[in-house]
Amino acid sequence: MIVTTGLTVPEGEITETIGIVRGNTIRAKHIGTDIVAALRNLVGGEVGEYTKLMAEAREQAYDRMVAHAESLGADAIIGVNFTTSMITDGAAEILAYGTGVKLKR
Image (cartoon, rainbow, N blue to C red; front, side):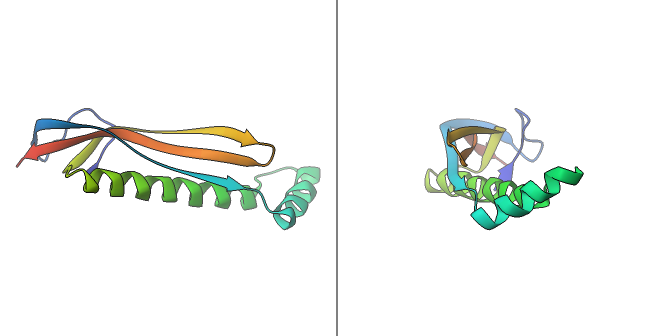
């Protein structure tokens, strides 16, 4: 599956637009992670525990977007974006979305 933030695909001509494809996940913080993060906030710097949590969430949302595109018969996804929103205190949604297209190669 070709995935790009661009609106064209150098590997082939877009022949059909399938439609919006998306994948999402909602992740909640863990109390153990919160304790370590609170301690790290005292000295400053990157909160690696949250960085790892969000990276895993983005990867899962991305994988779900690709699976959705494949289920619709898309050859590529163009115009890919990620967005996040807070669902409740301590839980956030990561959404990956783009446009599924068919290609002439």
